[in-house]
Image 1 (cartoon, rainbow, N blue to C red):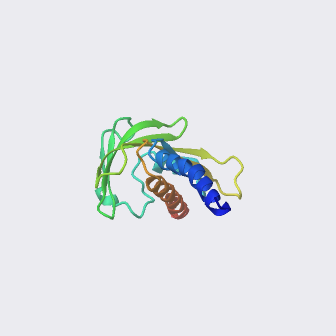
Image 2: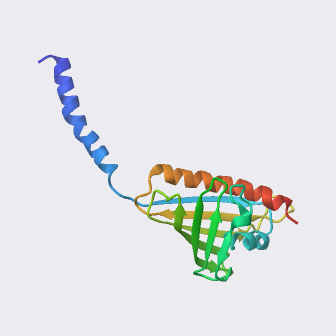
Image 3: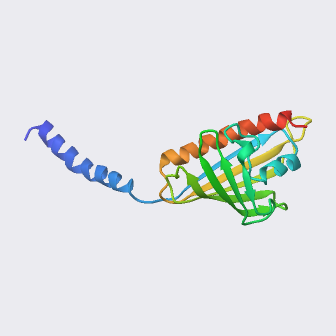
Length: 178
């Protein structure tokens, strides 16, 4: 045996099992959580009033005229049918609304076209920034999504991107409100 053939044999036999293990690990289901946060230049009560309705008034991708609310807007169990400008339609079911903690949670119960995962639970919380960066009031907002174990990395990263886009849109929306 030459050194090269001995090296190749050793490399192949020692690295191949780890490659196979890596390929197998891609098949192991695991749930994913996306957490993003931002500071919005607006009073907490104003931000909470808009967020808790789950109609996304700040979003340029929502067709606001066709948003449909079923059930009491302030009640758990109610639904929101959101139509997006790209012709997607999703129905959200409200799982939690808390005026005490300024938290709202929902799940997408139907989507046309269908989403590529079994479930996702979203939670948005709004808090007052007690030491704002300037003289204006600010709100801290956090948005968490817990995906089922069949959500692929592309879905997770798209969710992260959409949260960051939403926060930028909120900043613009609340800056011009009054």
